Length: 456
Image (tube, rainbow, N blue to C red; front, top):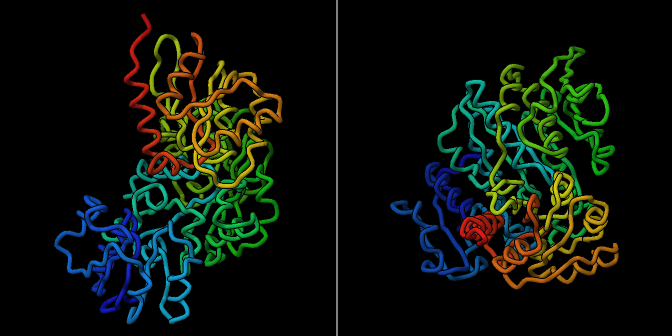
């Protein structure tokens, strides 16, 4: 779409909204930016907009600004059921999100990763693979770097690796990745989407515009993806750590194998993959499929798997103090993600759980903790502390205690841990009850841990 001289209202001045406004101005659009917060409250978030010709409407709702607009761009945090969004559609205004806008205006080959868990690690790993192969690569989207900023500078020969959330797919229209990967689907975000059927359908929208020239990659081990590959028009690849697949990546005799068009290539041994845990083996296998579809040379794939050290806030070792290892898994924002962190533990562990309530069941996590040989105690924080305690009690796990703050939780976990133990922050919840996002929660955890003094 040509946005020159189009009147566009951008609502929500977080990173993606600010980036969308920058991109639209570069395309010649007449832009109005809006947020319910005042300019003073937004503060330094607006710094990138300095010097741009924009109409600024802060501290007010968007409903009163719709008249005369051609396009409405909303941030991922705004549901497509918001009254002003519904009204805009009734008025014939074209409604999209920042991700869709950026995809329309970007250059380069687009690859995309979605799923409940594993997205950030997988897109970061892919970014390393493409960069190591000599391609200029932009890792964008839900990972925290807005796609719109990459669209300002991307070139035809570049590669774009986009982390896609279900929120972003609500407003996707022409989004068309050449290779798209779905890592897994488990219960999450039901406070917004209502049902698993809606949530799954939003994840599948990523494949909607693909053709037979494109590739769709699915996790063959995830029961939530059963039958979904039959819905796509593109070439299907699958990955599995438990069985061989007809086309894709799998493990045979502890070797990662890539099979494409009847040809098998050995990538590396599973114990050579730097990032630990069965979930990271799945992430690596998915990335191998995407890299194979994008014709990344096998030696580059192998080297990257051996050297990629993972992402911040995902099973990140912070420090060892008095024989206790502190691990930051603040990105464990749902039950399934924390289950994977629990499965990665190999030593006695005190786990810190709890946060914002997304209306999901904690019973599967409680069962995993009871069956884990490593989880010895749980320190519970946030809105969901009592819900998690009840789930743990039902499963027969009673080694729990409450903490009012993350700082208190760290102190209590330290007191409960012994030499050779872990203290693991993996909340199984979003952070919004106590922090701005999981990144802030993880940073605070690391600051608290790094400030601890050795015991006398």
